[in-house]
Structures are given as structure tokens and as C-alpha cells.
Length: 232
Image (cartoon, rainbow, N blue to C red):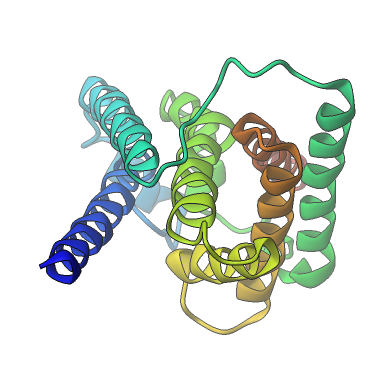
């Protein structure tokens, strides 16, 4: 009976985690009018059908829902979050350096990601519209927060809490990379390394805010470089 109860518990947790992952995609979907474009005119045509208020409300609603779900699953997995934990100057510096390192690794491992920015793309075209505000907020605040709560807080120190720290970090980083794209390429390798960096920061500081900060800084630097290269 105890085994059956435990099995149902873990099935429930897995389903809950999948729902979290599904819900956290909504803000990313609402930040752009379509996934890819072949021309600027195609983007303009798609943007004409955008209901800005609807996109904003959907992004806010699903961000809040996802955050609440992550908070409860962390409690369920015996990893109570503490956002009021006192900030340490040492850990702040460590988190910032880790974020910069993640960004540098992206440039070194996947330089081709920045090679086609002179061509029309959804990312840069969206930044020129009011939807750009949602896009920026998602990149530097929403996505880092929701992803670190799911992967590092819920999985690394929740699902894998009984494993050795480094094994938990590595397994979580692989799941983190696979969740973005299962294709085994240099981008996947970079995401695994970034996941390891964020996982290490969380393990070292025991403060999810530091992992979120690292992720946010990496995304912010990528955003800045992309904008500079695309508009020069």
C-alpha cells in the first residue's frame, strides 16, 4: 500500500511538472506574433492581427499561475523557497560572473547564432514594436525566474534531492537543455553547460535568487549584443 501511495505521488509530481513547463511557454508565445519569418513584410502582416492587451494579459496570468504552481511543487518536494534570504556580496559577485561566463560560452560554442542577424527575424522585428516590452521582460525576468524555479529548485533540489549534488546538477542540466531542444548539437551542449553553471550557483549559495540572477545576466548580455549587431 505504501509503495502504491508513493507511486501515485511521483506520478502526480511528474504530471504537475509537465503542466508547469507547458504553462511557462505561454509568455514566450505571447511575446511575438509568429515563430519565424522570411521577410519584414511577413512580420508586418502578422503583427496587424496582434491584440496587444490580450497578449499582455495572457503573459501576466500564466506567469502568475506558473509561479504559484512552482512554489507549491517545491514545498511538495521539501525544498521550501526563501526569497527573503539576505544577499551576500560574495554570492552576488559569483552569480554575476557565472552569468557572464554562460554568455561567453554561448559566443564561443555557437558563434553562428549571431551570424545571420542582418537578415529579418522575429526577435529583432518584435523589439521594434510594443510587444518588445513583453519580449524584454520575458528574457531578463520572467523566463529566468520560471526556468530556475522549475529546473533548479523543483528538479535539482526537489526530485533529485537524494542524489549527490554534482549528479543532480548534471542530470538537471541535461533535462534543461532537452526541454529547449532535444537536437544534439552545439546549442544543446551550450545549454547543458549553462544549466551546470546555474545549478552550481544554486548549490553553492542555496539561494534561488542567485541562479535567477546568473540566468538573467546571460540573457541580458545576449539581448544587448543581438540588438547592437542587428541594428548596425
